[in-house]
Image (cartoon, rainbow, N blue to C red; front, side, top):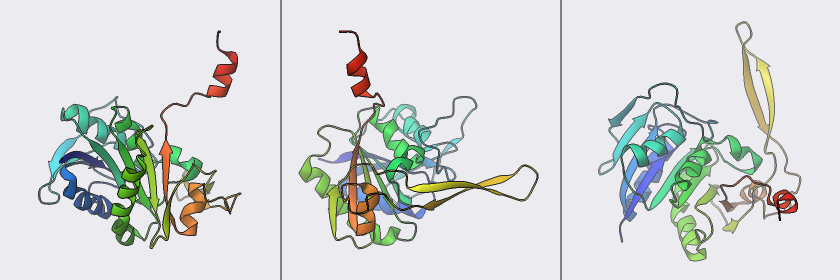
Length: 242
């Protein structure tokens, strides 16, 4: 059965990675691309509801209708579903130019997009890779997708976060690792101007291949099932009215 697929990203509608992802997804059915007009990295699941947003149809790949949205990845998903009044069988985000792993995925626009699509009960996958390995990583979309299907990973969640290293030696279901970047601020030119910086830091449990942060640096595709709720169920169950 042909699928209806929504694709977005946070690198922008003209980014190389989203074209790689859309070209691959076309084999499964009808692809609609709704992506940011410009880069929206670090925007998480933010939306714009204060001012009007520019949305227009733009040229893309043959056979793929595409829209540019001057807002966040989450807003792109919202327009693709609500604005276009369409139903989808699958939502994809990426291919991101940079890994999205560990506790730092809370900032990710790539992952924020699939949180938004999952609110509409759409099975959703975020795809990311290292900054310079997009052309290599896209060769393993089939491998990752077949793994997801065989393991029936959408049985209990609508969200999967997939990170693909170049030339992977295998694939693993993983859990979210710890803090992945060290943060800092550097004084920039101009009064009161600063730039945020970050460097990859060592993962505490370097041998724990169950962690996404460790798996990808050991040459494995990491597939992390995510969940929507942020409720601490241990505390809730301990203190709720009986």
